[in-house]
Length: 98
View 1 (cartoon, rainbow, N blue to C red):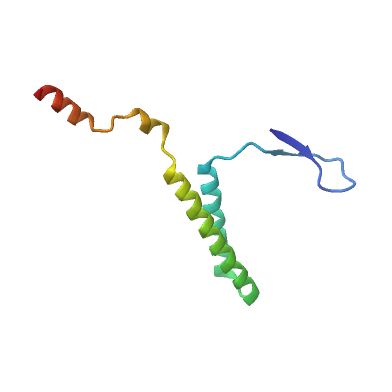
View 2: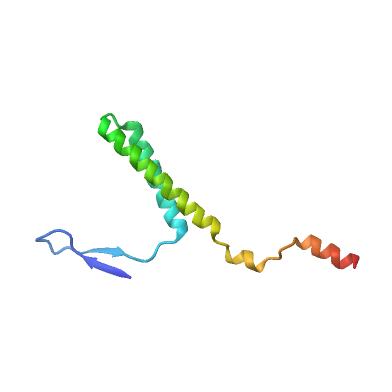
């Protein structure tokens, strides 16, 4: 679903935002990129308050990343359900030897 809206008062320019649901993989990727940005900001921060801010942001993003990767580990790919539980070689050997 796409929505059109205008944030600035007095202008007639519209912007387009795409509100399609993101996948778990996309969410993990965005979190990983945000974590890299937070680490870069932490490395370049000189103010004590900014350093504290980046520490909290990094901790938050790490917990989010762990949660998302745990969710991804629980998902079973659709391809996996179509595969044999045992290896095809084992199936061939048991067929030949029986």
